[in-house]
Amino acid sequence: MLNRDKIRKLIEESGMSNERFFEESGIKKSWYQKSINGNSEPGVYKLETIADYFGVPLDYFFDREQKVQIGHNVNGDGNNVGDISISEFKKENDLLNRILQEKERIIEEKQRVIDEKERMINILLKQSKE
Image (cartoon, one colour):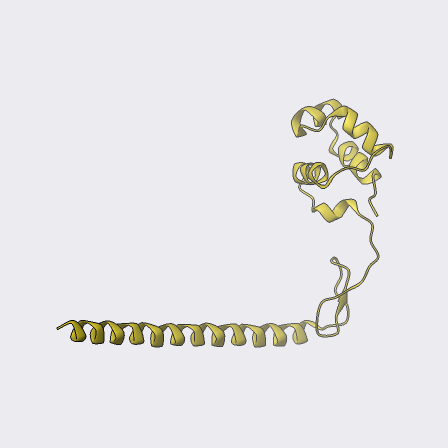
């Protein structure tokens, strides 16, 4: 759920005036007043503009308790990771890196075979024209 107070707090904590914020960010005062007071729903573009201006992620403006399954029986909410140890993480990370390297090797090998077959086809086509 959108936490409108976080927008207000960002401006206050920055120490700048609302007018300076409006001028520098390009956010209109009327939009700000309607959105902060809950009279209209702020669009993603405006929220993204504010997030970029203050250097915070877009998700910063939302309070969510939703847990997300992110693999290996690890639960996280985007900020905290659950029950996986660092050593388990490193093992999984190493395994995934080895899998990626093997996949890249296979792709390179397939490309080498394709190149060789194309070369042979060109040789055969050239011979058939002679």
